Length: 57
Image (cartoon, rainbow, N blue to C red; front, side, top):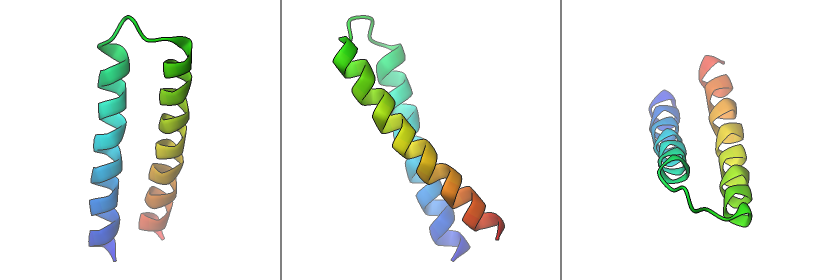
């Protein structure tokens, strides 16, 4: 089970880094795009936190 959690954590952390790179590397994002990326980041952070808690238990 820990292997599946580790795999999922790696995947979600890669997705998180991709969003960060996109936002930080683009100075012409619209407000709607920034909000969209923020929402996506929020979802990823929730999933990452849940997986880390599951990993500890």
